[in-house]
Amino acid sequence: MAEEVTYDPASRLMRVRAWGDDPISDWIVSKREVVQLHETHGANRLLVDVRDQEVAPALFDILDFGDAWPTTIRAAVLVGKDTPDDMAFLETVATRRRKSIRIFFSESEALNWLNQP
Image (cartoon, rainbow, N blue to C red; front, side):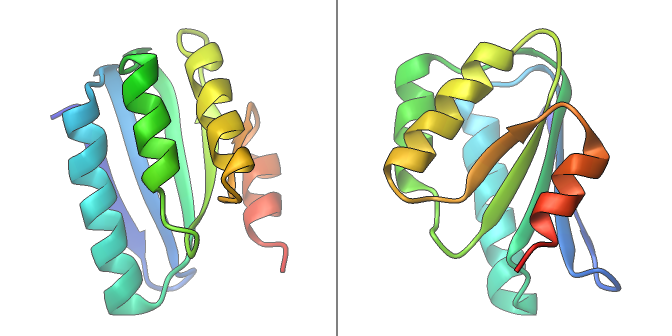
C-alpha cells in the first residue's frame, strides 16, 4: 500500500499521505478508512498529501473516484510535481458534482481553506 491514513482528535483533522505508484485500489481502501473516521468521530475535514506520489491512477478511475466522493467530507489535496494534472482533473470532476475537493501547492493555504466555515 502506498497510502497512510491518520486522524488527529485534537484538531478533528483526517490526513492521507500517498507516495510512489498509487493505484486506485489504494485510493479506495483509504477512502473507506476516511469514511469510517468520519462516521466514528464526526470529522469532515481531510488533508491529502500527494507531494511524493509518482504515478496516479488512470483518468477513468479518477473520474469514478471523484464522482463517488462523499459530499459530507471536505478534502484539500497537496499536489506534488509528478501528478498535478491528475489532481486538477480530480478537482474538476468533484467541483462539477458539487463535491468539496480542492488542490493546493501550500499546506498552510490548504489548512486555511479546510478551516473556513
